[in-house]
Length: 86
Image 1 (cartoon, one colour):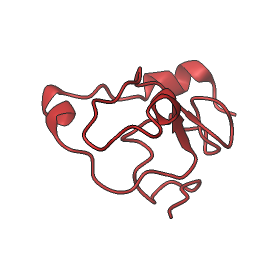
Image 2 (image 1 turned 45 degrees about the horizontal axis):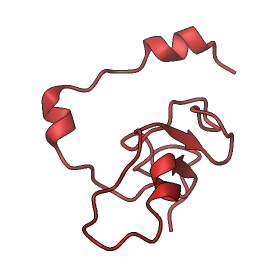
Image 3 (image 1 turned 135 degrees about the horizontal axis):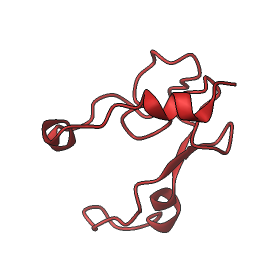
Image 4 (image 1 turned 120 degrees about the horizontal axis):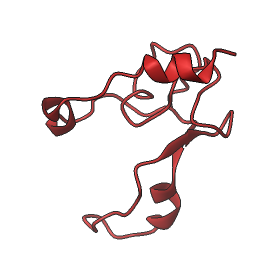
């Protein structure tokens, strides 16, 4: 597995424009966040809660099976070898 410091150095910080743009594509089925559990069953349009921290259900860590960082934007495309769609 890659050295944690090396992986963290390769993470690109998003710009304000990146944060304002809507995320495209479906999420990987293995992506998890606290909001998935605390918001379950809420009516449509209800403000959701969550701290924005994600983890992979396959590894139970913040790095996926491909040793790359997981997150809402990082796990929305099929370009990753570990991606699982619907």
